[in-house]
Amino acid sequence: MRITIKDIARMGSTSIATVSRVLNGKPGVSQITRLRIQEIIDQTGYRPSLVAQNLALRKSLHLGFVASNLVNSFYVDLFRQIEKLTRNEGYHLLLMDSEQDIEHERENIKLMRQHQVQGLIIVPVHDYDESTDVDHLLRLKLSRFPFVIFGKVDGYGFDCVTTEERDAAAQLTRHLLDYGHRRFAFVGDHPNNRCVRERIQGVRDALAERGLHLPQQAAIPMDDIWFDRVRDVLRSKDRPTALILANDSGALFVLQIARELGLAVPQDLSVACFGDREPARLVQPALTTCAENLHELARLCHEILKAKIEDTQRQPSTDLVPPFFVPRQSTGPCPEGF
Image (tube, rainbow, N blue to C red; front, top):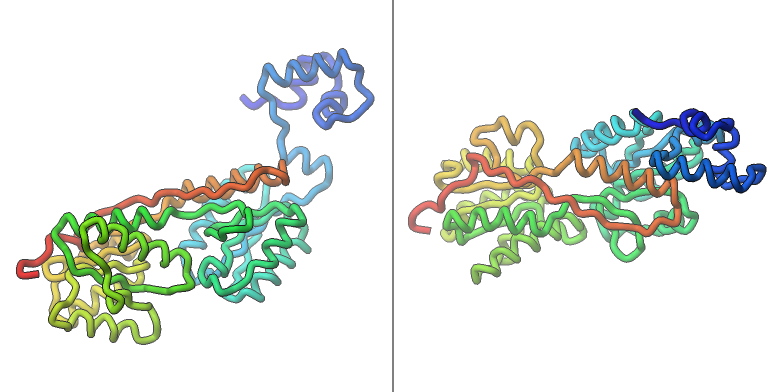
């Protein structure tokens, strides 16, 4: 059972107001009483409720979640997970969408602060496009406003939580290498996208371990004509036998392209990806993937933001959460003759 301030007051034979003065380091308490109350606090491991303190100080019980783009359903799922955690502690989590626009992101943060949120979880546009600046985030840090980045922005001392990408991509690639594949293509290349850059580097790392490399033409950007690029690559004489997609939605389209070209998955072509939305599990063949650890990502965002609210001078950290490697039916042995 959780110890309350009433319990501390009862055990110390004093009033709640006196205990509150001790907790907040306020005068008006004798040294003997202060030591007695502090000893009870230490023995019981009592920690004051942040919600109760906020109510007493008439502070807002609102937190904010600023997503870079809610078209990506993963951020909706992440918001829901964090919202459950914050709701259990008496907070309301507000949501805004920056629609992949840095100006919208700045405005959303400004509006959240006008609504007097106590802290923010921000999925920055910069994580998708590193050519955008982070001056507004730096100003937020310098003002000691509590916030956590979901993603990774290096060099500024921000608190960051994200999925570990590079080693996960290497693991996915080794899985295909162990099946005998030697010809690879990566679909979704984007030079300014931090997440994709780390994934493709992980692929290159694993290939280099076996004395292989990823040709430049095999790093296919997911642009307006990527369907045609993939068709051309799969029609070529030295076509890849393994495709790795930057996301699961792209992998679903690749399965369609393979059918159009008469290629069976995984007998003729193995397909693997990142992300694990429901279609990836239900499509035939089900997709081999690296799936984000949603529960741990949400927990870390919540816990670090709480810690930041309680101590705005807390040392920043970057927490990388390994995803789950999920082998399914879309990957198999390299076809003979390749």
